[in-house]
Image 1: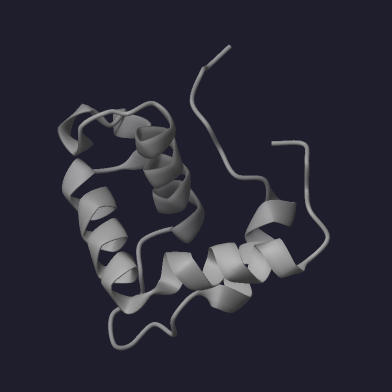
Image 2: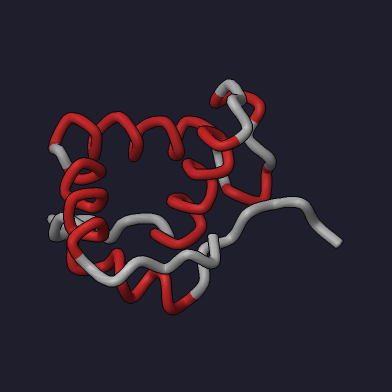
Length: 89
């Protein structure tokens, strides 16, 4: 059994309204990248130590940095806090 963290489809449905619109080239798989970002932060790892299953560490870092600067993660947290909580995770 893998100890990697993966967002469920239901969790992705709750998160998707907070994502910025993709301009130009389509984004790399949101579920894979966000699961990787959560895994890195949850386990206090360096970006370069990200498991290969999540894709290139540079992709994870770039998405985290870009979305952090845009306030996307802050909007996600605020929006989810206002909804009914999912206490399973």
